[in-house]
Image 1: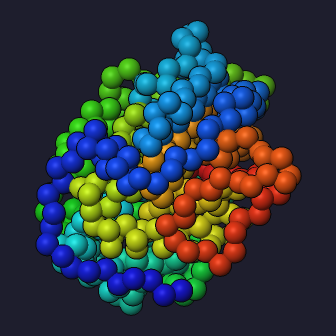
Image 2 (image 1 turned 135 degrees about the vertical axis):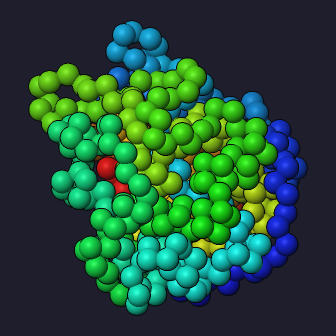
Image 3 (image 1 turned 90 degrees about the vertical axis):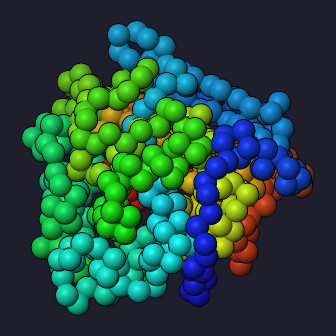
Length: 424
């Protein structure tokens, strides 16, 4: 696949606040997405609860037509009986990769990194061995052949275990370079650029590149370039502080022995993921971030060219799911949506938006280590974006796709599979 080569342009000040980002989306003049199918979204959330989550929510924000906004909650934010709160904070897991990608694209625009040159040239000396020539673009696309270090920490491919969590995750503090070293010892898994294989180590590497190129701690760069300009007051990166700041949902890890109670996993250092999954946020802040991102140059985060590169998604082994530069594309019956998912012990989130940024959907559940919970949440995306299924002969409203597609998504099958990073 031919991808656009990044342009080195002057750094633009990131000054657009949340309301400006939303207005930029609304002013584009494209029609809003179909009215959400509230009943079907609620049914998906209830299915998520039946699968084992204490609670779940869906937040739909339509910046083209605010009358279509929806906030739906079911179940509990905590097993102490507190009802689920859609405005509270939570761990976003791999949604963190979108934030890291924006920082990298900003540095590319400044000419500080060329994504088509070996990434090792932009990392601290010795981070990757001599001869590891995978590019920054390949790493961000999960096409670099880099082993996922989390497989070692979790003992097995697939869902994590409560035993591994208590032994190596909850209180352990890992240096990012040590996480990379765990991966490197396995060697290159395949010729870079020849296949797709999701790896959390890829975005630990991108975080290290951000630090090396700016000379600043990753948390500070994130704060200065994204969180402060967008006024994301619910969003933070405090690794390895185990606490979540402010009012937050309690997260629960499904026990290895399903007959035992859920394990409260709220407090954890998140250092084993670092830039790949250490952000905490809220549905409101994720909406603000995605809306600004999809506005391109007018959103203040990345240029229009950088956004096009991020959206240039390549197919993955999961049907209807493609991956670009830190952005996942899901093909729904009414068109493509962009964003990411995130699963980190006790929390699951799917955050997506239409290409024009008009509609953002954030769905969440406070349980992990349970693939049925993941599938339940995925089932909320189709009705939230595409509305009710039409009669067989009725034309279907569509969401404009930013990237041309050779074939339209099948209208007869609206099931979205659980993503390939279903454990983290």
